[in-house]
Amino acid sequence: MYSDDDPYLAELRAACLRFPEAAEVEAWGRPTFRAGKRIFAVFEGNDDHPFAVIFKPEPAERAALLQDPRFYVPAYYGPSGWLSFDFTAADVDWAEVGELLDGSYRQVALKRMLKALDGR
Image (cartoon, rainbow, N blue to C red; front, side, top):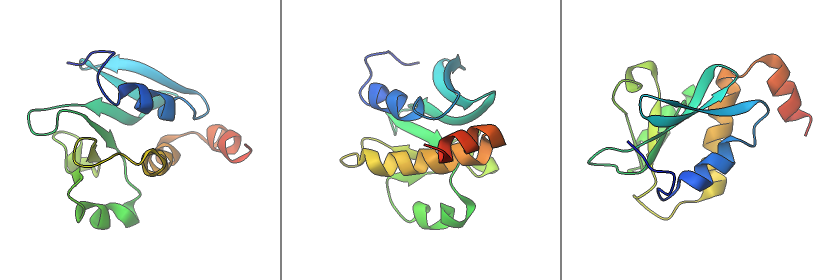
């Protein structure tokens, strides 16, 4: 479960909703961020990582990201290649989070969405 006043959620929401046609949809008791109907980010929390974002890393970067202790393989999404970024592991660099979200969005967005994004 989550609360709208959870730390990091407002920043994550702003970062996700800047993408063309991005929408927030609550699913499984947590905010998911979608490009059309396809998820590109999920705000999550668990006992070990109370505030994190699940995202789909660019395949070439996944192994390198896992060398960083801020990243871990989440339950359910992990077998499909997704990773989580723990907001509480260190000071959050929102530019870095934006880059991770951009890579995740680009993997699920439709061509027209990518065209709109690249045309900015």
